[in-house]
Image (cartoon, rainbow, N blue to C red; front, side):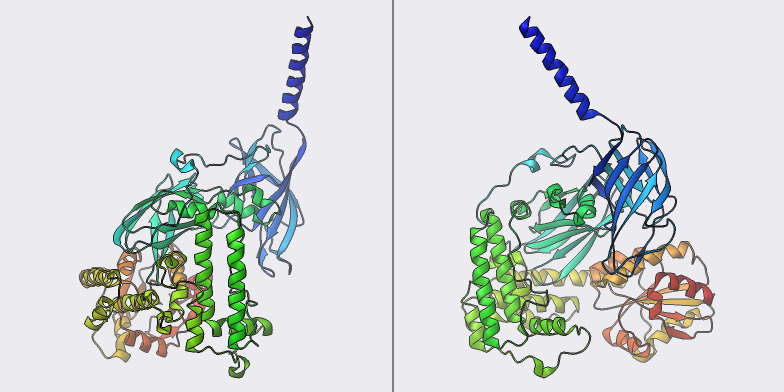
Length: 621
């Protein structure tokens, strides 16, 4: 009987505890977990559930002096039902809310009452472009799963530690497969992959996503490279070390979008997820580094306070060496894996080479920061630091500048100065510099036998082989360009008459001329924003769309992009674009030239404003 009574009592206590844990009723939840989001401007930091309403406490973070707006039609959605916004305090829905000098604000929004049984809900400002959307706002207090749903089991295993692998001086066709876990159409239907190569350039590839958030891209790769994924919403999808010729599967934990939203909270690091998991030759490095809890051990070159512009050359040099020694000791003693420590050291060494090779730049940066003078030139007599050849030679004794694994950290440091000219044995710095110069010449179609001979004289024949491969590929693309139906031959007239010859056939119509290039990020953004107008607000047979790029555009990228840009395309020479630029005072690209029905042309840089672009073109019709 005693045992039965004890068991009965235990059951009663357990039931009471379970009832307490799952009790649903009026309550306040602080800092709920936001799993997915398309914004970092607003964060829901409090949820109050009552019988009569649901009150959200919202923190806003935005540019000081700019405004945000909350639409009156904002709703909450939970379990297939919608709950309307009924009141607000601290902000007026539908009206512009101007941010203070702090760039931070707080207000409350009151909605129809969510059921007390609600575990998660969505915040939906509306269906218009740019509307704030936060999904799966968790108010249960349960701990989030470590891994995203759908991640392969093998990627959940702990990474192996050990020495860094070697740099791959090889050539291959690399394939990157992207899998978004999970996918929401609001995240966009494409992802941009930026690849930083050992020739010192960056290539951009667009990965189209299917309805499940999967996509793939293949591209030629020359040597080990670093890849970075960026969503349409500007969120980072993480970094990847790429081995030439491999197929890489990248799984993106989309909960990082919610993490970005919560990043202004004091305790957001407790909710930290990994951005990505991926297969591939170098996946161990990336995972060891991303999972390291060690702080940043670097020079903070771009703070404006890295150096003191009053220093002379030797003072600057001693300062950099002292910081290098201190940070090296910190890395050696930090709590991180061996691979992570090695990578941190290579990144530090790259920053040291940048600091020493670009000394004048960083001293000028400090001068500008101290004097808050970012537009005026730095007075010539304000910086007197100079370094001699023997000083640069001493820098090369701090560590092995011919270690190929320095390339894991990038090539900025090796390109900052011709380090091999200091008399140090080996030729890695010289090779990277010649490789970068040769690949630029290939793009400009100026690569010649002298360049080939110079590369073949290097100790590593990879650089010569890679350039020969690039040259063949570029020549093939030039032939494709010549045969392309998307490109209109440039009129064979004097350089200063090219523009008039291009627009002459279209007199009587409104001509919009867009000066752009493939390497110009703002150009690509403007093209994407303006393209839908041709079948929307600016759908009119009396508008002619002309696009002019020059030979600085990568041919392969150019051929990839122009089929999706409706209009007449010209690719002109450096001399021709210079003449156009001089005539219309072109101050950068994108740049617009508007031609009215009478053939009068005027430069209109103000059309970079999207709304002005639309109304101005309409006014010419």
